[in-house]
Structures are given as structure tokens and as C-alpha cells.
Length: 310
Image (cartoon, rainbow, N blue to C red; front, side, top):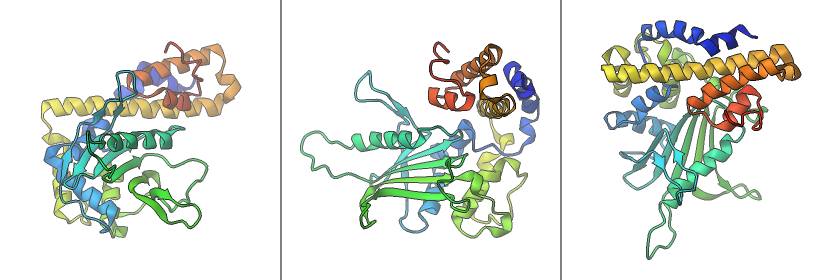
């Protein structure tokens, strides 16, 4: 069995990394805690506003936001619910779902569309209503690239709307999906031009930095680095970040380990009973971290039937 898989199962590789975690000066925005700390709190809503305006690049301006309940219930008790990383609305009632997505899943686009139905549905007013809707934006910051070379290597930002396939005009402009493939962003500090460049540079490199880069002179980045400094966290925040970082590294190690095992042993070899039991154990750990069944299947190669009872 792969050494990485063994280490994952017993937690050795995680514990070694955890010893060095707080040697990093700034939090990792790819963690659940880090992302919500920077973008999901009332104290730091100016950071989210700046990021959203950078995405729009002047096409529209977000002046203020109000955070909404990130846990959305279904139509009834049996309906599937949705939990967003960040959910907010502008003073004009436009809705924003902002998500950090670390793991590719086969039906990620489907999930994005499904999530967008919640802010659409909740606009249905009781009584007299003419069906007029406020705009809904689903923003995905992706720690992966779309598969099968769907986009070229230099195309990392995508804005999608409902379009007429005949003459290519936007048929409905109130439903927008924005995706950023972060692994494609490779600009260095001296190549940063736009505010979006600067925000993506921060998201990609924050955990590696020891001080604010000279290119980030705007006041908003001074605020961000102040809020991201681990040494300034209280005990509760440090504990929350530690747990979130452990979950992030558990998942990262599981992905690496599963891929290495698959490459080394081959698909058929990986189905042998001993290997299968190891993968099922990994699946249990990922499920305990809150990962969905389809994500776990994609990472481990186990079928839905294999994971029954996990």
C-alpha cells in the first residue's frame, strides 16, 4: 500500500504538518475557516465588497451588502437543503452566493445551478406578485480546473448567462454564474495590473507570504493582511482555524494518496479486497469531514455500491 495512504490512515503526515502550521503568518483562504473569516463576517464585509467589485471590473458597483442565512432549507422537511459558504444581498436586493470549491466533482455545474434556485425561489412574494426577479449571482472560486480541456490554459475567468444559441445574445441577464480556475493564475507580483489580478494573487499566495507585497498598496489589502494574521487570533479562532486546516489537509492528502494508489496499482489491482478496505477507510474519513458521496467516489474510485454503509 502506498506510504501516503498509510500515513493518511493513521494521521502521521497530518500531525507532522500541524506542528508547523502556525509558522505560517497568514491564514489559508482555501480552508473553510479562512474563507469565511475573510469574506463571511460583518467585520470584514468591506473585503467581500472589494472582491465583488473587482470581479465586475466597473460594469456595476456594489456599495453595500447584507449577510443572509447561509443554510437554506428545502420546500418541505423531505427536500434537500443547501449550505453556502457566503450568502448575501446588496441594498438593491441582488443575491450573491460565493463559494470556495476545493475538490472537483462530476456534477459541480449541476450543483451550482441547483444552488441558484434557492435565492430565486425565496423571491416569490405572497399575494400579488408579477414575477419580477432581482439578479442572482453564483460565484465559484475553484481550486481545480474544468476537465477535458473545456477552456484554454490562459482562460481562467468565466461569466455565464442564459443565451440564445441562434444569435448568441443574452436572453436573460438576471442569472449569472462566475467561475475562477485558480490553478491557472500564475502572475507574479510585478505583473499585477487590475484589482482582480491583485485579489487573485492574494488568494493564491496568502499562506506563503510573510508580509504584504509592495504591489498591494490599496488600503483594502492592508485591512486584509491585518485580519488574516494568525498571531492576532483569539484562542477560539485559533482552535477553529486549526480544525479547519486539519480538515483541509486530510482531504488534500486523501486526494493525493488515492491518485497515487490508482496510478501505481492500476484500476483492477486497486479493487483487490485489501486495497478496497483501505479506500473504504479513506471514504469514511472524508464523509466525517462533510464531503458528499459523489466527491468521495471521484477521489477514491469506489462506486456508490462500494460505499454503502460507509
